[in-house]
Length: 179
Image (cartoon, rainbow, N blue to C red; front, side):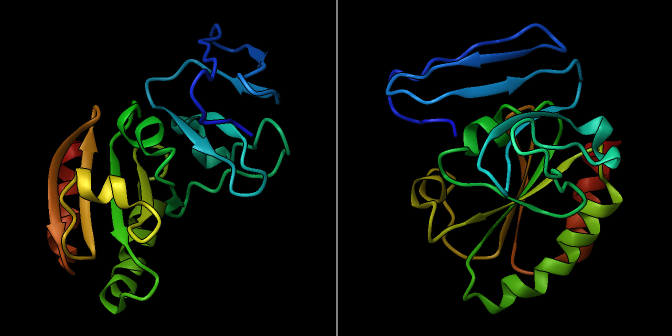
């Protein structure tokens, strides 16, 4: 698993190659790179390994480079505070971020909308969920004061946000950024 401690080594392998790196503090990181205008870095939900994923091939169900389990991109992907910058801000594709909490009833109302968008827009954008209870620094950085808050990012920049349950507005934002 990638270690987020200071001194971590990072590499930029040639497209289509696999490289092994030993970060400061030990451990092994396997990174894969593929040429894509829609590349994104995601942590495997099963083993925790970071993977470079080509979203344009998401419908083909890419697998983790470490455990070979599927990277499920046809639904919202949970992103931690530690991975937010690398997954959301460094994404080559638009990213819709749902800032939520497990205890929030309105957040549960938004979930089916996000499932629908993730499924319909697979390969064109990424839909992620950030639990505000476990990501306080990211929540403060983006001024999240009420949940659910949905923020649409493109090229690492906030494009627009939606507060509460506004399904038609969110669909319109997504269509505009993908146009």
